[in-house]
Length: 148
Image (cartoon, rainbow, N blue to C red):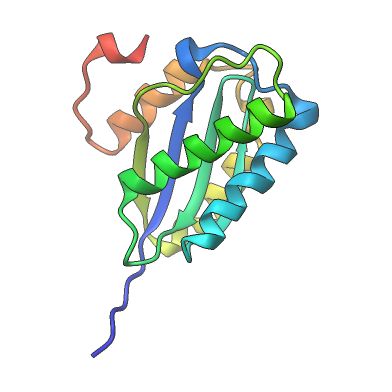
């Protein structure tokens, strides 16, 4: 028997202190780097997007890959790229944690559209408000002090 999985993740994390440092013009370079990390880990990227202070990644993860290790590798790789190429001048790092949610495959197209529309979405709602909604929607208990 081989290993078979179907787990669609939305991974969300922000810059340190939610600083608005991920300027739009150079975000695609960061996205390409993250796609490379996922590809090297045999994960499938469906969509990546975000705004100046946070990212959303829609992916399926290879069964041999631990979620926490993957997020760590994404952050380390992104930080190296940012420092090496100086693509975000005021970037000071990533938040310590992350949020990850699972979805059915039927939700994939809606998730991709949601991530594609992050810029417009955040004209109406802050990242903190969005994250609280996601946590509540998925029944995740959280401590308000970690959302600052």
